[in-house]
Image (spheres, rainbow, N blue to C red):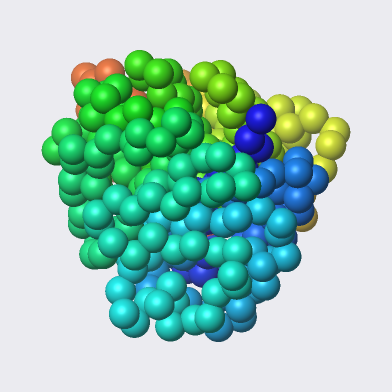
Length: 361
Protein backbone atom coordinates (compact mmCIF):
# COMPACT_ATOMS: atom_id res chain seq x y z
CA UNK A 1 0.00 0.00 0.00
CA UNK A 2 1.23 3.50 -0.88
CA UNK A 3 0.21 6.33 1.43
CA UNK A 4 -0.13 9.75 -0.19
CA UNK A 5 -0.87 13.19 1.23
CA UNK A 6 -2.40 15.59 -1.30
CA UNK A 7 -2.86 19.34 -0.80
CA UNK A 8 -3.34 22.29 -3.13
CA UNK A 9 -4.05 26.00 -3.30
CA UNK A 10 -2.36 27.14 -0.11
CA UNK A 11 -2.18 30.69 -1.57
CA UNK A 12 0.49 31.70 0.91
CA UNK A 13 1.00 35.46 1.35
CA UNK A 14 -2.52 36.32 0.22
CA UNK A 15 -3.32 40.03 0.67
CA UNK A 16 -6.59 39.51 2.62
CA UNK A 17 -7.55 42.96 1.37
CA UNK A 18 -11.05 42.86 2.91
CA UNK A 19 -9.56 42.77 6.42
CA UNK A 20 -7.84 45.49 8.42
CA UNK A 21 -4.05 45.61 7.78
CA UNK A 22 -3.23 44.14 11.22
CA UNK A 23 -5.68 41.30 10.71
CA UNK A 24 -4.41 40.68 7.17
CA UNK A 25 -0.86 40.30 8.52
CA UNK A 26 -2.15 37.95 11.22
CA UNK A 27 -3.99 35.85 8.64
CA UNK A 28 -0.79 35.50 6.59
CA UNK A 29 0.94 34.26 9.73
CA UNK A 30 -1.93 31.81 10.24
CA UNK A 31 -1.31 30.55 6.71
CA UNK A 32 2.28 29.81 7.69
CA UNK A 33 1.03 27.94 10.75
CA UNK A 34 -1.24 25.96 8.43
CA UNK A 35 1.85 24.77 6.53
CA UNK A 36 3.15 23.29 9.79
CA UNK A 37 -0.16 21.52 10.39
CA UNK A 38 -0.05 20.15 6.86
CA UNK A 39 3.40 18.61 7.29
CA UNK A 40 2.50 17.34 10.77
CA UNK A 41 -0.54 15.54 9.35
CA UNK A 42 1.59 14.10 6.55
CA UNK A 43 3.98 12.71 9.16
CA UNK A 44 1.21 11.50 11.47
CA UNK A 45 -0.31 9.47 8.67
CA UNK A 46 3.09 7.99 7.71
CA UNK A 47 2.75 9.15 4.13
CA UNK A 48 5.50 8.22 1.69
CA UNK A 49 4.49 10.79 -0.94
CA UNK A 50 3.33 14.41 -0.57
CA UNK A 51 1.71 15.89 -3.67
CA UNK A 52 1.26 19.69 -3.84
CA UNK A 53 -0.94 20.61 -6.80
CA UNK A 54 -0.06 24.24 -7.44
CA UNK A 55 -0.83 27.75 -6.20
CA UNK A 56 1.23 27.20 -3.08
CA UNK A 57 1.88 30.94 -3.26
CA UNK A 58 -0.73 33.56 -4.10
CA UNK A 59 1.60 35.40 -6.47
CA UNK A 60 5.21 35.59 -7.56
CA UNK A 61 5.76 38.12 -4.76
CA UNK A 62 6.68 35.92 -1.80
CA UNK A 63 7.93 37.02 1.61
CA UNK A 64 11.27 35.43 2.36
CA UNK A 65 10.07 34.15 5.73
CA UNK A 66 7.22 32.31 3.97
CA UNK A 67 9.46 30.65 1.40
CA UNK A 68 12.00 29.69 4.09
CA UNK A 69 9.29 28.21 6.29
CA UNK A 70 7.89 26.12 3.43
CA UNK A 71 11.35 24.83 2.54
CA UNK A 72 12.10 23.92 6.14
CA UNK A 73 8.78 22.20 6.71
CA UNK A 74 8.98 20.16 3.52
CA UNK A 75 12.52 19.17 4.38
CA UNK A 76 11.36 17.75 7.72
CA UNK A 77 8.91 15.22 6.29
CA UNK A 78 10.02 11.70 5.46
CA UNK A 79 7.84 11.71 2.36
CA UNK A 80 9.06 12.43 -1.14
CA UNK A 81 7.52 15.78 -2.09
CA UNK A 82 6.35 16.68 -5.60
CA UNK A 83 5.23 20.20 -6.56
CA UNK A 84 3.35 21.16 -9.74
CA UNK A 85 3.38 25.00 -10.01
CA UNK A 86 0.03 26.57 -10.87
CA UNK A 87 -1.36 29.74 -12.43
CA UNK A 88 -0.71 31.94 -9.38
CA UNK A 89 2.85 30.66 -8.89
CA UNK A 90 4.08 29.54 -12.33
CA UNK A 91 7.58 28.23 -12.72
CA UNK A 92 9.99 30.77 -14.16
CA UNK A 93 13.74 31.47 -13.85
CA UNK A 94 12.92 34.24 -11.33
CA UNK A 95 10.39 32.27 -9.26
CA UNK A 96 11.16 30.96 -5.79
CA UNK A 97 10.98 27.49 -7.30
CA UNK A 98 14.08 28.29 -9.36
CA UNK A 99 15.98 30.69 -7.12
CA UNK A 100 15.86 28.93 -3.74
CA UNK A 101 17.75 25.84 -2.63
CA UNK A 102 15.07 23.22 -1.98
CA UNK A 103 15.61 20.10 0.17
CA UNK A 104 16.71 16.86 -1.50
CA UNK A 105 13.34 15.20 -0.90
CA UNK A 106 11.51 17.94 -2.88
CA UNK A 107 11.01 17.59 -6.63
CA UNK A 108 9.57 20.56 -8.54
CA UNK A 109 8.14 19.96 -11.99
CA UNK A 110 9.60 22.66 -14.25
CA UNK A 111 8.18 21.97 -17.71
CA UNK A 112 4.81 21.96 -19.43
CA UNK A 113 5.82 18.56 -20.81
CA UNK A 114 4.86 15.80 -18.38
CA UNK A 115 7.86 14.38 -16.52
CA UNK A 116 7.86 11.01 -14.77
CA UNK A 117 9.90 10.09 -11.70
CA UNK A 118 10.05 6.39 -10.85
CA UNK A 119 10.33 5.74 -7.11
CA UNK A 120 12.00 2.37 -7.03
CA UNK A 121 11.66 1.91 -3.26
CA UNK A 122 7.88 2.29 -3.54
CA UNK A 123 7.37 0.84 -7.00
CA UNK A 124 5.36 3.80 -8.27
CA UNK A 125 5.60 6.38 -11.04
CA UNK A 126 5.01 10.01 -10.04
CA UNK A 127 4.18 12.28 -12.98
CA UNK A 128 3.65 16.01 -13.22
CA UNK A 129 3.95 19.21 -15.21
CA UNK A 130 4.10 22.93 -14.47
CA UNK A 131 2.41 26.15 -15.43
CA UNK A 132 5.07 28.36 -17.01
CA UNK A 133 2.77 31.37 -17.16
CA UNK A 134 -0.52 32.50 -15.66
CA UNK A 135 -2.55 30.88 -18.42
CA UNK A 136 -1.61 27.42 -19.57
CA UNK A 137 -3.40 24.73 -21.54
CA UNK A 138 -2.74 21.25 -22.80
CA UNK A 139 -0.61 19.82 -20.01
CA UNK A 140 -2.32 16.43 -20.19
CA UNK A 141 -2.57 16.26 -23.99
CA UNK A 142 -1.59 12.84 -25.40
CA UNK A 143 -0.29 11.64 -22.03
CA UNK A 144 -0.03 7.90 -21.35
CA UNK A 145 1.31 6.45 -18.12
CA UNK A 146 4.60 4.50 -18.38
CA UNK A 147 4.16 0.84 -19.19
CA UNK A 148 6.63 -0.49 -16.62
CA UNK A 149 4.21 -2.51 -14.52
CA UNK A 150 4.09 0.08 -11.73
CA UNK A 151 1.05 2.18 -10.81
CA UNK A 152 1.21 5.85 -11.79
CA UNK A 153 0.04 8.94 -9.95
CA UNK A 154 0.10 12.50 -11.25
CA UNK A 155 0.08 15.92 -9.60
CA UNK A 156 -1.29 18.70 -11.78
CA UNK A 157 -2.91 22.10 -11.55
CA UNK A 158 -5.95 22.22 -13.80
CA UNK A 159 -9.69 22.41 -14.34
CA UNK A 160 -11.74 19.26 -14.85
CA UNK A 161 -14.53 19.39 -17.41
CA UNK A 162 -14.27 23.05 -18.47
CA UNK A 163 -13.05 22.84 -22.05
CA UNK A 164 -12.74 26.61 -22.51
CA UNK A 165 -10.86 27.29 -19.30
CA UNK A 166 -7.48 29.06 -19.74
CA UNK A 167 -6.25 27.16 -16.68
CA UNK A 168 -5.26 23.79 -18.10
CA UNK A 169 -8.62 22.20 -18.90
CA UNK A 170 -8.57 18.44 -18.36
CA UNK A 171 -11.19 16.27 -20.02
CA UNK A 172 -12.70 12.99 -18.90
CA UNK A 173 -11.49 11.42 -22.14
CA UNK A 174 -7.89 12.40 -21.39
CA UNK A 175 -8.14 10.96 -17.90
CA UNK A 176 -9.84 7.74 -19.00
CA UNK A 177 -7.04 6.92 -21.44
CA UNK A 178 -4.18 8.18 -19.25
CA UNK A 179 -3.56 4.93 -17.39
CA UNK A 180 -3.20 6.81 -14.10
CA UNK A 181 -4.25 5.27 -10.81
CA UNK A 182 -4.61 8.63 -9.09
CA UNK A 183 -4.76 12.18 -10.49
CA UNK A 184 -4.08 14.83 -7.83
CA UNK A 185 -5.58 18.08 -9.04
CA UNK A 186 -5.53 21.64 -7.75
CA UNK A 187 -7.05 24.97 -8.88
CA UNK A 188 -10.76 24.59 -8.05
CA UNK A 189 -11.22 25.64 -4.43
CA UNK A 190 -14.11 23.24 -3.73
CA UNK A 191 -13.16 19.74 -2.66
CA UNK A 192 -14.35 16.84 -4.77
CA UNK A 193 -13.46 13.37 -5.95
CA UNK A 194 -14.52 11.21 -8.89
CA UNK A 195 -13.79 7.91 -10.54
CA UNK A 196 -13.19 8.21 -14.29
CA UNK A 197 -12.44 4.94 -16.00
CA UNK A 198 -9.76 3.29 -13.87
CA UNK A 199 -8.51 6.61 -12.49
CA UNK A 200 -9.47 8.17 -9.19
CA UNK A 201 -9.43 11.96 -9.46
CA UNK A 202 -9.14 14.03 -6.30
CA UNK A 203 -9.13 17.76 -5.62
CA UNK A 204 -8.93 18.70 -1.92
CA UNK A 205 -9.89 22.33 -2.61
CA UNK A 206 -8.08 25.23 -1.02
CA UNK A 207 -6.24 24.57 2.24
CA UNK A 208 -7.56 27.72 3.96
CA UNK A 209 -10.56 29.90 3.13
CA UNK A 210 -9.79 33.50 2.18
CA UNK A 211 -13.23 34.93 1.47
CA UNK A 212 -16.96 34.35 1.64
CA UNK A 213 -16.78 32.30 -1.56
CA UNK A 214 -14.68 29.78 0.39
CA UNK A 215 -16.81 29.10 3.46
CA UNK A 216 -16.49 26.28 5.96
CA UNK A 217 -13.60 24.05 7.06
CA UNK A 218 -10.80 23.35 4.58
CA UNK A 219 -8.08 20.72 4.39
CA UNK A 220 -6.20 18.10 2.40
CA UNK A 221 -6.61 14.48 1.27
CA UNK A 222 -5.10 11.30 2.62
CA UNK A 223 -4.94 8.84 -0.26
CA UNK A 224 -4.28 5.10 0.05
CA UNK A 225 -3.29 3.31 -3.13
CA UNK A 226 -3.32 -0.48 -3.03
CA UNK A 227 -3.28 -2.37 -6.29
CA UNK A 228 -6.24 -1.14 -8.34
CA UNK A 229 -7.98 0.26 -5.26
CA UNK A 230 -7.69 3.92 -4.32
CA UNK A 231 -9.39 5.49 -1.30
CA UNK A 232 -9.55 9.15 -0.20
CA UNK A 233 -10.04 10.47 3.32
CA UNK A 234 -10.43 14.24 3.91
CA UNK A 235 -8.03 15.65 6.51
CA UNK A 236 -9.07 18.97 8.13
CA UNK A 237 -6.25 21.45 8.67
CA UNK A 238 -8.09 23.62 11.20
CA UNK A 239 -7.85 27.37 11.55
CA UNK A 240 -10.41 30.13 11.20
CA UNK A 241 -13.18 29.71 8.67
CA UNK A 242 -15.47 32.03 6.74
CA UNK A 243 -19.15 31.61 7.57
CA UNK A 244 -22.34 33.10 6.15
CA UNK A 245 -25.57 33.23 8.10
CA UNK A 246 -29.06 34.58 7.39
CA UNK A 247 -31.05 35.66 10.46
CA UNK A 248 -34.68 36.75 10.53
CA UNK A 249 -34.86 39.62 13.01
CA UNK A 250 -37.65 41.53 14.68
CA UNK A 251 -37.62 44.28 17.28
CA UNK A 252 -34.35 43.02 18.83
CA UNK A 253 -31.85 42.13 16.06
CA UNK A 254 -29.00 41.53 18.55
CA UNK A 255 -31.00 38.93 20.47
CA UNK A 256 -32.02 37.22 17.20
CA UNK A 257 -28.40 37.00 16.05
CA UNK A 258 -27.19 35.67 19.39
CA UNK A 259 -29.95 33.06 19.42
CA UNK A 260 -28.94 31.92 15.93
CA UNK A 261 -25.29 31.65 16.98
CA UNK A 262 -25.93 29.71 20.19
CA UNK A 263 -23.86 29.96 23.35
CA UNK A 264 -20.43 28.99 22.01
CA UNK A 265 -18.15 31.94 21.21
CA UNK A 266 -17.48 32.44 17.51
CA UNK A 267 -13.98 33.62 16.55
CA UNK A 268 -14.38 33.04 12.83
CA UNK A 269 -15.08 35.48 10.00
CA UNK A 270 -18.80 36.01 9.55
CA UNK A 271 -21.13 37.67 7.09
CA UNK A 272 -24.60 37.88 8.64
CA UNK A 273 -27.57 38.94 6.53
CA UNK A 274 -30.50 40.39 8.43
CA UNK A 275 -33.92 39.52 7.03
CA UNK A 276 -37.50 39.79 8.26
CA UNK A 277 -39.73 42.76 9.05
CA UNK A 278 -38.47 45.50 11.35
CA UNK A 279 -37.62 49.14 11.59
CA UNK A 280 -34.22 49.94 10.14
CA UNK A 281 -31.56 48.12 12.24
CA UNK A 282 -28.74 50.28 13.53
CA UNK A 283 -25.88 48.37 11.92
CA UNK A 284 -23.13 50.42 13.59
CA UNK A 285 -24.60 49.80 17.04
CA UNK A 286 -25.08 46.11 16.28
CA UNK A 287 -21.52 45.84 14.98
CA UNK A 288 -20.13 47.37 18.16
CA UNK A 289 -22.26 45.14 20.40
CA UNK A 290 -21.30 41.91 18.61
CA UNK A 291 -17.71 42.59 17.55
CA UNK A 292 -16.09 40.87 20.52
CA UNK A 293 -17.62 37.54 19.51
CA UNK A 294 -16.04 37.49 16.07
CA UNK A 295 -12.64 37.80 14.48
CA UNK A 296 -14.35 39.86 11.78
CA UNK A 297 -18.02 40.60 11.21
CA UNK A 298 -19.90 41.99 8.23
CA UNK A 299 -23.59 42.82 8.58
CA UNK A 300 -25.95 43.18 5.62
CA UNK A 301 -29.42 44.66 6.03
CA UNK A 302 -32.04 42.95 3.88
CA UNK A 303 -34.97 43.61 6.22
CA UNK A 304 -38.23 45.10 4.96
CA UNK A 305 -40.07 47.83 6.85
CA UNK A 306 -43.29 47.30 8.80
CA UNK A 307 -46.43 49.06 7.67
CA UNK A 308 -45.76 51.76 10.30
CA UNK A 309 -43.12 53.24 8.00
CA UNK A 310 -45.89 54.46 5.70
CA UNK A 311 -48.33 55.67 8.39
CA UNK A 312 -47.94 59.33 7.33
CA UNK A 313 -48.34 58.61 3.62
CA UNK A 314 -51.87 60.03 3.55
CA UNK A 315 -50.96 63.31 5.25
CA UNK A 316 -51.58 66.45 3.24
CA UNK A 317 -47.98 67.59 3.57
CA UNK A 318 -44.59 67.40 1.91
CA UNK A 319 -43.82 64.41 4.11
CA UNK A 320 -47.02 62.67 2.98
CA UNK A 321 -46.32 63.35 -0.69
CA UNK A 322 -42.78 62.04 -0.31
CA UNK A 323 -43.94 58.83 1.36
CA UNK A 324 -46.81 58.28 -1.12
CA UNK A 325 -44.43 58.30 -4.07
CA UNK A 326 -42.00 55.91 -2.39
CA UNK A 327 -44.80 53.61 -1.19
CA UNK A 328 -46.11 53.42 -4.75
CA UNK A 329 -42.65 52.32 -5.91
CA UNK A 330 -42.48 49.84 -3.01
CA UNK A 331 -45.91 48.35 -3.79
CA UNK A 332 -45.37 48.14 -7.55
CA UNK A 333 -42.34 45.86 -7.38
CA UNK A 334 -41.71 42.39 -6.01
CA UNK A 335 -37.94 42.73 -6.34
CA UNK A 336 -36.52 42.63 -2.76
CA UNK A 337 -33.58 44.88 -3.69
CA UNK A 338 -35.87 47.55 -5.19
CA UNK A 339 -38.18 47.34 -2.17
CA UNK A 340 -35.24 47.84 0.19
CA UNK A 341 -34.11 50.82 -1.87
CA UNK A 342 -37.54 52.49 -1.65
CA UNK A 343 -37.84 51.72 2.07
CA UNK A 344 -34.36 53.07 2.84
CA UNK A 345 -35.15 56.24 0.88
CA UNK A 346 -38.30 56.63 3.00
CA UNK A 347 -36.37 56.07 6.23
CA UNK A 348 -33.63 58.54 5.30
CA UNK A 349 -36.16 61.17 4.21
CA UNK A 350 -38.09 60.85 7.46
CA UNK A 351 -34.88 61.17 9.47
CA UNK A 352 -34.01 64.40 7.62
CA UNK A 353 -37.47 65.88 7.87
CA UNK A 354 -37.80 65.02 11.57
CA UNK A 355 -34.36 66.35 12.50
CA UNK A 356 -32.63 63.07 13.34
CA UNK A 357 -28.98 62.35 12.64
CA UNK A 358 -28.69 60.62 9.27
CA UNK A 359 -26.35 57.73 8.56
CA UNK A 360 -26.33 56.59 4.94
CA UNK A 361 -26.80 52.86 4.47
